[in-house]
Image 1 (spheres, helix red, strand yellow):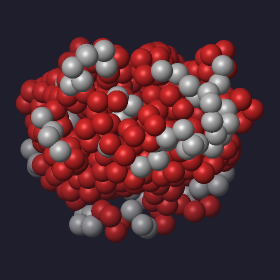
Image 2: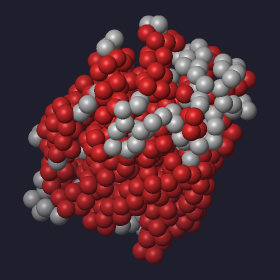
Image 3: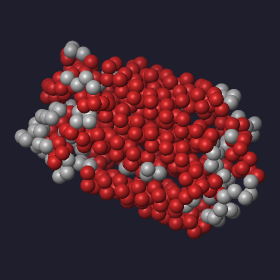
Image 4: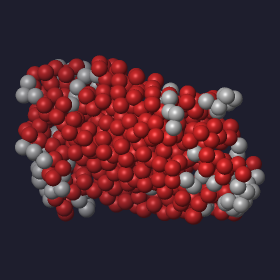
Length: 508
């Protein structure tokens, strides 16, 4: 078994502490989450702005304004409109596969740099867009940026962080996504009030701010010790970096494990083929199941289309954007709470609590909309605000469970020899189903109507049961010794076998 090492002293912990150097490096790298979140928030906001719709999607604008016969649920059903949102994710999917090769061969830092630069170019093109073709091309460049950033940043954070703080540090990525989405919602709310009708240009062009921060910051980022060892035979340089980020001189135990893991990874020429082997079956299943489940929670329905959804239930343009700001604040606060408690209570507990919270709120939202919102007319203000409160409860549940943990768990479970390939599979599956949900949601809303929330609620119940049965706890386990959680799991040990009979994970 790859990296089949005994886990010893102090519950398998290495020497070291959280240092300001690690904290600063991870804060810069986590800006990769800000660009992802900003785009999610901006695309949802501008597609509810009337001047933007009038310029690029006149058919939708006309239908929204003058077609009194069309169902409330079908006003925004447009393939071109969904293509604007979802084109980014196909580009991101393809880019993340290429990013895997860059990350493995050249390190995590170049991939983060490439992501920032591509996103910067895309934001400039979108802000200056004169027609739908410039708009879609800009979205594709944004997708390339997000693809590189989402492939490299979670790996970077997991490899830099000490094991006992890895959950909090990696959840910083999703916290940054929340910050980006909240910033976008606030900007949309401000630019929508510009009477001249060009506020959407500011919204799209402001994506250059976090992209510039990431691009410039990436020049100063240190490379991870894991990557230095993977790409060089000069282990002294990796040792010095390890001493610097751990804040202690005695790093021999962790360095030895990194070298052993690297020696195994050096024998792997085709990591995508290697990950299909039986002994990596749990990691492969999680790399596919977790991002799939993350998308069918229905969160991107809220993230992309919240303003449209709030307009569907009868709120005005400004009220819809303000409601999105509120959900963004709730999501950001709940993710911050997750950062504080994930390494204390563990991954499984947060998955379970968040899953139940999302399920109950989705059923209630679907019930209210089924009872109160027909094909024509709106709902009373009281019920509209009840839906808003329920959506905030749902977003909070996602914010401390599937939001951050959907990135954390896949990034920490792969052995070094398949780590870059595994993270790419995670990102590809995430983008693929983000694309499918984004591309089909408005049509599904038109056909399913309020039943859309019961549809996603059904998936939440499935994923909560999946976590309960099949996901072992990974808190406080050093990243290069993670294979032992599968060996000791009631189900996975039948598949992977006991590759290290002497190894036991001691409770920290």
